Image 1 (cartoon, rainbow, N blue to C red):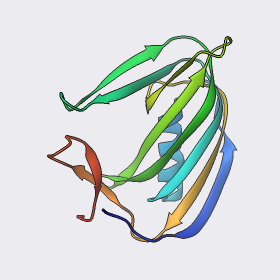
Image 2 (image 1 turned 180 degrees about the vertical axis):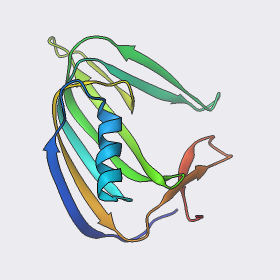
Image 3 (image 1 turned 120 degrees about the vertical axis):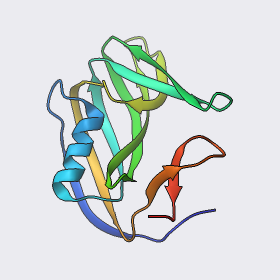
Image 4 (image 1 turned 180 degrees about the horizontal axis):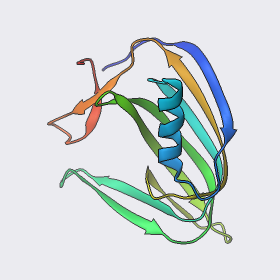
Length: 144
């Protein structure tokens, strides 16, 4: 098991710009404010979404798009470093007008209709993502 203790850092709460990508918007906020480690939540709605699920046997993400307006029922994730830059790891559950849901790992090409974010910075040595041979994923590592 790999874990570290962190102290609460700064907190950023705000609104996304209409039509901008959710993931890249969070990355931009982190880069602008030198956030290296954080947790976040998002509420609002998207114009469309790109989601996926990791196929453990093939060691590859299978992604899909929903090209319709959806409400963000839940979106949480963390921010750490990958190749020295902020990396967003997010999962989301979204619903349509009938309450039917889609969910999974959230990818770019997810334009926001209207949304708000809450980023809680964690102070301490940030985790960096490194390739893990056993899973094929970019996981947190003690290495630099």
